[in-house]
Image (cartoon, rainbow, N blue to C red):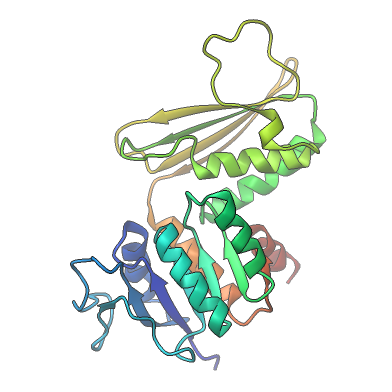
Length: 267
């Protein structure tokens, strides 16, 4: 029988961390070794409800040989700590932390030569499949207009969402260009027809919307609509656990959910 993957969750007191804890307690593929919180968290030292035994929230990383993979949903500072630890000890890292600057992104790129690293702006497996479909459609219909509409709850701070930007990057790459060259984030005050090859973005913020992403590809006399709607935040935690299980034990490299899906479909 395969041994359970030994897991540490960084950012365990956050929304995603709590969702991960709720799921991992009933997932026989994993053994939770550490639930890491920020230094100022009020939960430090308190027991982790989702676990049996004496495991409590901590800011101290466990011994290097204590676990196989880290899932990180913390923040730039928390991810920096996790990355330093994983690089030093050769531990695999799955991260969904966003809002990183260009310098940190370069550091992540370099880290992939030393550890198995899987990062995603959105861990929904449905969004991962949506991205694959978008790449194919954008490459097959390069002259069609393409817009991305996203909606989230009224507390979300960044706009467009990281997922919307990732979709835009996938479409631009499939068309042999970059999002920096093709993105249009606002049309107010613009006069004249749409510029060929642009990728437009529209943002909705309101209520308790978990996350919706719609891609419109518009040709002459026909239109393709690719849509994903999330109704339960646990889908992101489920996807992160799938990624952690798949990544554990792999060689150093820069992985994503598309690589995981491709591996599954070829297996």
